[in-house]
Amino acid sequence: MKASAPGKVLLLGEHAVVYGYSALAAALGRRVTVEVEEDSKGPAIELLAPATSPTPTSSADLSPIPVPPELLDAASEMAATVGATPLFRARVRSELPLGGGLGSSAALGVALARGFAQLAGRDCPPERAEHLALQLERAFHGAPSGVDPAICARGGVILFRRGEPAQVDRISPRRPLHLVVALTGVARGTRSTVLPLSARRAERPDLYDPMLAFLGELARGGARALERGDFQDLGVRFDAAHGVLAALGVSCPELEQAVAALRSAGALGAKLTGAGGGGAAIGLARDGMHAEGLVRAAEREGLRAFAEEISP
Ligand code: MEV
Image (cartoon, rainbow, N blue to C red; front, side, top):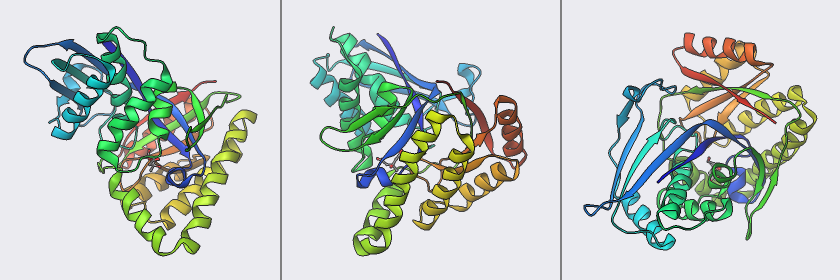
């Protein structure tokens, strides 16, 4: 059984979304693919992911990654919930670098949910895949907001607000959005920035809450800017969000270098994306050619980068 799910970028609203404010997320073209089969020697997971290149051109660019025991446990629990055999072998191939802030773990969760459902002969609509992937994420990230599995299960662009149930509005960009993703090469688990920020906020809510609320407002306005096709507006929001995220303490020198490189090459705006502390930065380009120029500028700074078109 073969199934897959896309990675994601947080365009705006990361961290704020953990506290109930809005986030704007977009699915990427790069995916995680899973092949699952019954195997009497299981359960087992084999994981292949890009070690050095974010744009693998052949399977030779992918390296075997050791599978943490928590992942095997969480996957076995998922198989049991779905009604699939506990004796499975899953071969996972990720086009996304792991720990790069691009939703590899949520995409893996969604793809596994779809693969196990096929093995059990069941349907797996997006809401179900999202729910199962969120349970898997909890094994890794402590208290995830749910935005990553929501976008990886649904694709497209969404404005997300956590809750029971979460509020998910599909956003249709008026014209294609050209982004550049620049990888710092620093892999950090989401936990490593989310939990310390939560501790800082618990001590000084008066200082942190207005900043988190502002990030949520930037995301809501960003959704409207996308619908109008107003990328100048969106670029200003990227820059403003990055400033606030840095003030919240979730940037790092490598991300500052990536954001500066994208801005000095003419990006309409640039920011860290996802949990921060490493991972990736995104820059907004005017069009496809400009995006290629931004990729080359990031590469001249020693960063690995790729262009992504997010189509209406
Ligand atoms: C990670 O992609 C986004 C964060 O807001 C964490 C979460 O929402 O679970 C940093």
